[in-house]
Amino acid sequence: MARQLLQQCLQCGAWTLATTCPSCGGNAQAAAPLKWSPEDHRAEIRRKMYNVTDANWASSLASLPSLDEMKSVHDASEEE
Ligand SMILES: [Zn+2]
Image (cartoon, rainbow, N blue to C red):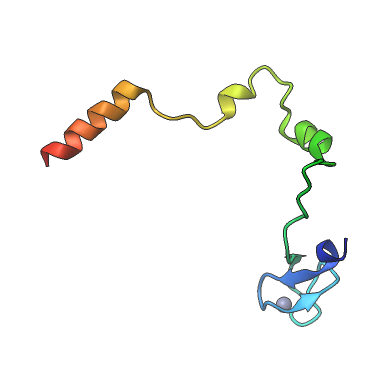
């Protein structure tokens, strides 16, 4: 819990527990990412945040080009 309380200023790099920097008044944000757990206590919150139950969610994910597209790009780069 304490890791999430520590903030670092984005402008000057000073450390603080507040979200505004005591040195320069700039924005400070969490100094370390949230602790990861295999039990994933925040999964429910994250699913809501990314709206994964929406029918269009899957189409918003990144995807690779098709195999034919990759082959044509590969062939073109070998000719150079
Ligand atoms: Zn600062």
